[in-house]
Amino acid sequence: MRLSLGDIVPNFSAESTQGRIEFYDWLGDNWGLFFSHPEDYTPVCTTELGMVGN
Image (tube, rainbow, N blue to C red; front, top):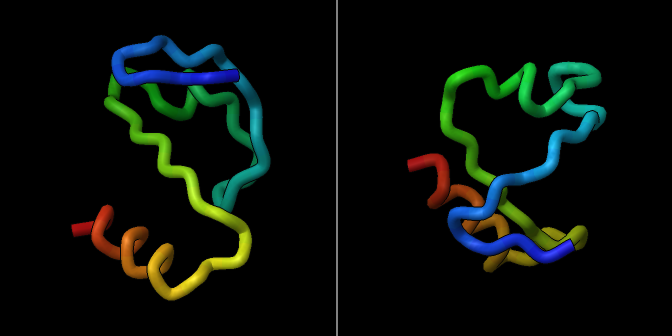
């Protein structure tokens, strides 16, 4: 599946650090941000991931 800015994401369930979630139930009326990263966590990826939190 390809997503672009402004697309409506289909609802899904996932295991998370907060337990199993249903995305739209978990999100509620708030905004969400999807951030994709490779599994290997290279130094550049971890730096970029840290920048998202700022």
